[in-house]
Length: 203
Image (cartoon, rainbow, N blue to C red):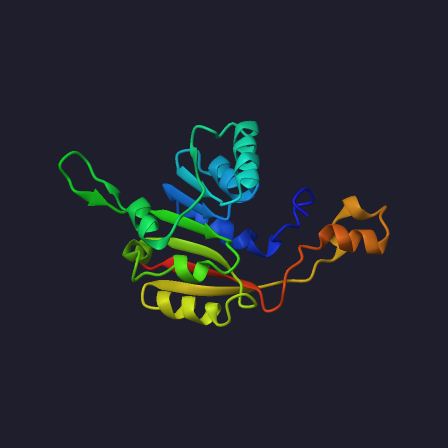
């Protein structure tokens, strides 16, 4: 699906919008092989990118992907990140003697339910000024979609993006495959009511 350009293609307009807002800090939690961390680093060469994943094999793959795409110098790596640490990442030192500042930040989060604990403005107040794209996992954490929407209602413009069906005929590369093989190559193994939330900061 990634090679075909079908992977999470529902998000393409949202990614275009979020990148157009020119974040200087990108935090990708659940970075996996680097699809988003490295892809966004290529789109925003001046941005500082933090790729987070608890799986050492995933982090190794992400490092290799960054090196192959010539962005290793702008991508940092971490194995853990909780809400208080996220606050420390989002609040950076200002100019000499100028206290602290909150850079324009973008969070891309896919962490199998942990979004419920991580994306908590009560523990990380700087989230109020960050854009957030998060895959929600109500099948793992019942009600997480509604809780996150409520937490960000006062500070962000929300959008929910639902899973869309994949049509093999939209991908000419699959023309020679059987219908079963084409469906298998496009299957991302998602669970209903799984969806994404986009929170665009108002300030």
